[in-house]
Length: 167
Image (cartoon, rainbow, N blue to C red; front, side, top):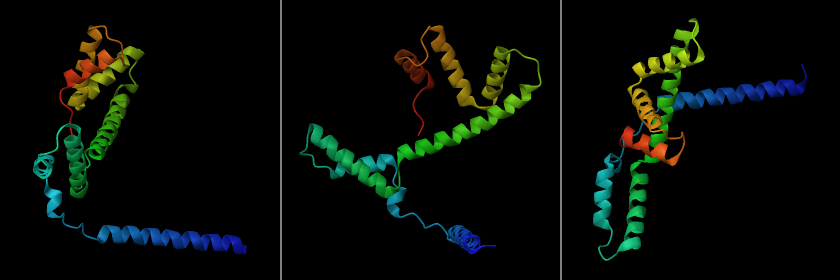
């Protein structure tokens, strides 16, 4: 065994030990209780900013002052709607992917044409995920109107059909 390989193994072992110790410390440290500012809802933040922003400001200046106030309060309250929405979307995506795999396994051994298999898997997934079922119905409505996938009109019809955004 050469000196380089022994040194390399020692460094890898030490870094692994430090990594595991860091994980152990992170797991054993109780989470800090949120400060009072973190319990503010978006509505409360908006109301507080309306009260703070000067009534003398009008138009773009008032909007900019409100935007800056809301961003600052959101940051201090730990609310980042875009990040929360992204995390929710990732969670839903991984759940739907797992459900899709289950449905594919269910129909894998059956002798179906590609269209029959796709329809069967979509039906199976629609039973497991009501949001996906609603999306399929909206897509069918848009296709009945002979709208091209990805066009502005198609997206508008999908948004209207799906209802207000979550998050």
